[in-house]
Image 1 (cartoon, rainbow, N blue to C red):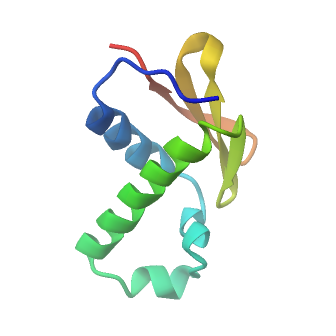
Image 2 (cartoon, rainbow, N blue to C red):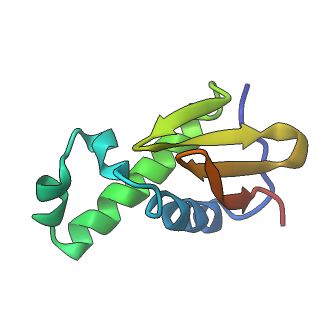
Length: 98
């Protein structure tokens, strides 16, 4: 299974970055705690979150959902979107179409 998309990949990643950064403890994907995360510069944080977004995109191409910190991300192929949840609540929908 692969993710089907028609939107510009960089724009999808921008939206995923925004979504992921709202999930509590998303930095645990890097095996960091809050003090590790806070010790990074803003540029380093930006690179980490962008890398995580890219990784999630490819993971969701082979798995229907994956954990992200205290939330999860799901690929909804029937609606051509990625859903990002914080805890049990939906926080963002990332469209994969123009």
